[in-house]
Length: 129
Image (cartoon, rainbow, N blue to C red; front, side):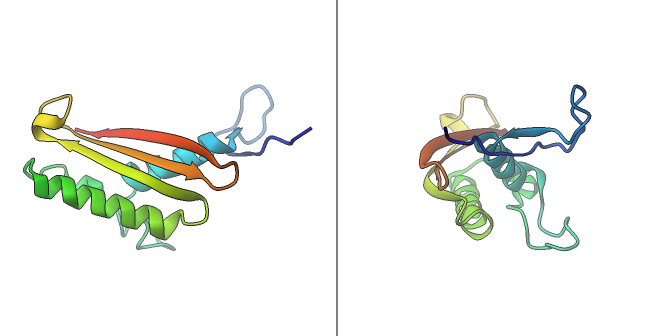
C-alpha cells in the first residue's frame, strides 16, 4: 500500500475537525506553491527570500500586447525554473492576452508541468485582471 503524501495547506490554518495544522495532498500543495509564486508574491516582499516571486502584479497596468504576453511567459518560466526546480518539470506556459483572452483586458496564464515525485501532469490556470 502506497502512502499518500500530504503537506501544509495554503493559506496556513488550523483544521476545525482535528485541531491540527490543515494539510492537503501533495499535488494540491504544489498547485498552491505555483499560484503563490505566480500571483501572490512580488520580489522584495519576503524578508529572507527577497528575489522570490514572478512580479506579475507589477504588469497589471501594462498595455495589452504581444510584448506583455512574452514578458509574462518569460517571468513565469524563470520563476518556476529558479524556485520550483526539482519539484516540477515545466512542460508548457501559455499566455493569452488581448483578443486571444476570454475576457477583454485579462491576461490568462496556463502552466502545465509534471510533478517530479509522482510523474503526473498537472495544469494551473490563473487570470490576471
